[in-house]
Length: 388
Image (cartoon, rainbow, N blue to C red; front, side, top):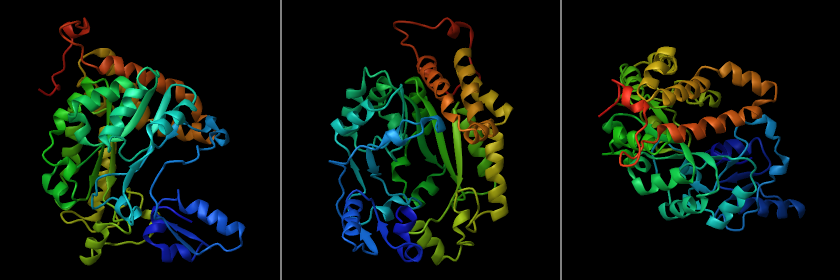
């Protein structure tokens, strides 16, 4: 056994496995295989060498592509350069660098092996090494790909890097806003979000032709029962295409867990509930019941037909509004349909529709250069919800 949970609690995991792996597995897995062949596997393997150079390519021929909408998922870096208190990365990468990348040639070779146009970068922070990201995006120009990735608020404010990514095919950016409270950001040591203009970041991402998937955490110490409505209202007012909400969860090995344990505020160690959808802590300014109820209400309100309509009207033109309604509606209101497709093992057949939507968003969201062209639609459409 290996992974985040095993690395944080190797003693617990060791009761259920012959060998456990702490940290990344690039160096320890080959070592285990050699020990296993020799009949001497060790009970514990600790990663000490952190590199992706020479990593063998994934056996993608084993993948049943019809099961996945995003079959072209890939990772070209490990970890994150930041260290937020609620994040598991610091514990998982303890003992070595917490962020490192493939070579540009490795990353491009992996992309070349992937069929179709769509790519889904699963990296925690694809933009974390700016020189690497800039060179990667430069090399990807002209490949005809459309892709999705995760980054920080700072990506939206970095015009050069954002433009390079968009020109290389970036079409949706997952951004960890987490909270609208400066005090919460400071308490969780999420310094990369401090003193950043969230509104400006979203506006610039949209102007580059990229959709925003914002993520938020509820249950931080400055959150009271009004945080849910305030957060949803702000996200809708920004025309944020999709939003994902989470409950603060004290994962083992994190600074957050150590603090809440010392304060006696952890109410459950049932790991089945550690899915960011159940309240396993005692919040500072509301009850656990209020926290869970508000979390579910936030999802309902953001993806309600009224919420989707208001969100779409934040766009400047009707084509962009219609794409927004289709994309967010499919994301937030058709879970039953995705469950049905997954159970029928046909989810992969939705991939062409995803690619078409992503490609259309790049054309419709991007703000035209007023010196060269003005869309006729902009002459007679406007939105009262557009932020200045």
